[in-house]
Image 1 (spheres, one colour):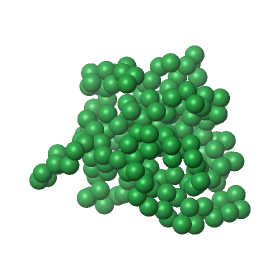
Image 2 (image 1 turned 90 degrees about the horizontal axis):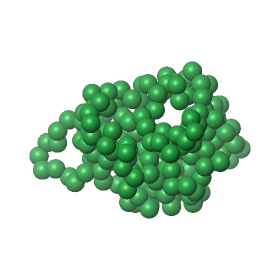
Image 3 (image 1 turned 30 degrees about the horizontal axis):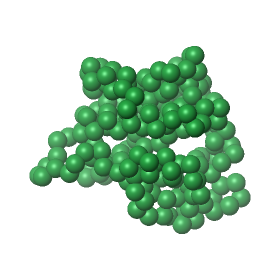
Length: 192
């Protein structure tokens, strides 16, 4: 199993994981799956500022995680929203846990301070994953989205990526400027 930075060429494998979630589950609030071209565009856009990581086995993408902007206003710039998806054939193998651990270390090195995850409820597996990695529940938006004939709640979880700083924190480093740093390759190789 290899963990690596995603590329636009991974879009078909990411689509294979994500499209069924969009079509059959409220876990994503998208109502139509993005096509492979759109996923490739999203990967490239995310990688400008945040990591997008994939777990690949035998050339097949089995899981992915990424960070994105939590909110647009400037004071939020040290916060990041994170997501994880695993292929239906590869669940319960620890892939999301392993990828998330790498993602969190990279985000901390980029100077992000806090990670947030929104989880459509109920979703016991996702809640268990996030809480096992140090997230704590901070609230629920009730009936915030309507999909598949029903209203859905979204719970929010948070965790520290780095300890709070006194005074003004250093600016986050965009992933595009950081991805060739030797520390990135070392983090991808770690499995703890």
